[in-house]
Image (cartoon, rainbow, N blue to C red; front, side):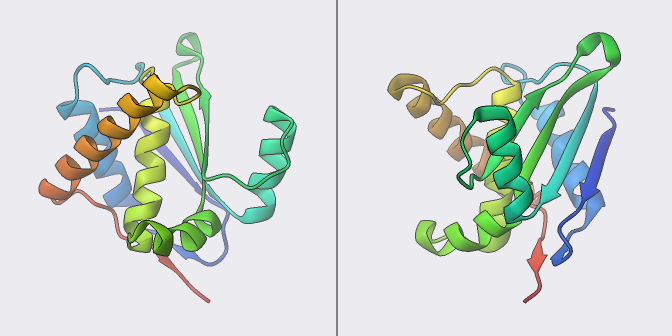
Length: 153
């Protein structure tokens, strides 16, 4: 099984690492065509300011975003890194009629799909990615693999 390295740098976010690891192992076992490269997966839960800085540094865009995906180096044993913004999930969940946990899980799935080769920079690939997100989120929920997240005030 793939090693999942979780970095919790958001000081108000409460996570259950075992649930997150279990969800990613479920994804690895259940979704052949959308499989991500072999190797360790790094997941960082970050705050608003850190996400803005990353987005500026790597995409030359200082705006806040939900998730950034960094492909890994397979020769170094890394499949990639996902950096997700808990603050963005808190702001966006009500707009999508999602719970906070659902919204943050969606960001994890979105990043995972990027590592699996999905793209959302143009219309047709974006539609396919949204369809994959819905299908995989439904499978995660049905298998009772949805992680629980809490953001303290």
